[in-house]
Image (cartoon, rainbow, N blue to C red; front, side, top):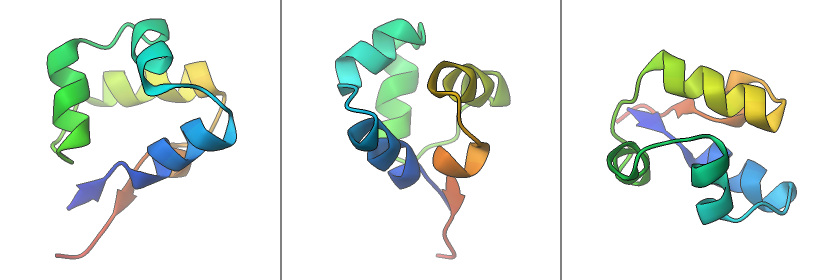
Length: 66
């Protein structure tokens, strides 16, 4: 299972609100909702997030064995 817990921690560390993050990355409300439910999103979206946060993919997602 993919988890976005590293993303939420990264946002806290960088002092960026979730709503500011969503708008700045131009992420749709549906995609954002999917991320909150640990559902899959496209690599294109992950790329936008990494670029905006200037971070590695491991700062955004992690694999968690169910």
